[in-house]
Image (cartoon, rainbow, N blue to C red):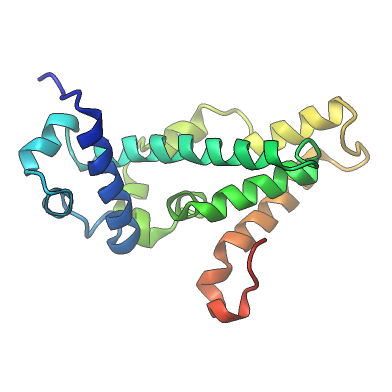
Length: 184
């Protein structure tokens, strides 16, 4: 079956979907819920997507692209954007800007639910394509270029960076929001 090419309607469906998935989670959000919120029929959704999983995976791709664009905009606007600290800060700001990406990064079971247990899901496929973590590869590349210190194992630096990121994106799960200062 040929999928529809009306991009405006498709983007509206994805926009509605992201807010529903964040609020109710993958398991509790149905195609019917998405259709109702997007003011389209379920059949219209199936013109664009084979099923809820394919819609969700297209949403993951779109949100990753959006995250990358925000990250790059922040990076380019920052006078220290070319430094490791500047790149890291831009990444944290961009992640904080997108609740879906934060949920993906920490593999939030409320948002992602049973999708995370599906064999060969988008996240598993993406991780399988990488022989090493992207953060480790980045740190190693920066060390090889002499941009960051070389006397600490790149895996250790990448692990510390991961701890910081996971801590920052998970703080709202364990602390009251009024006790967390603005990320800026």
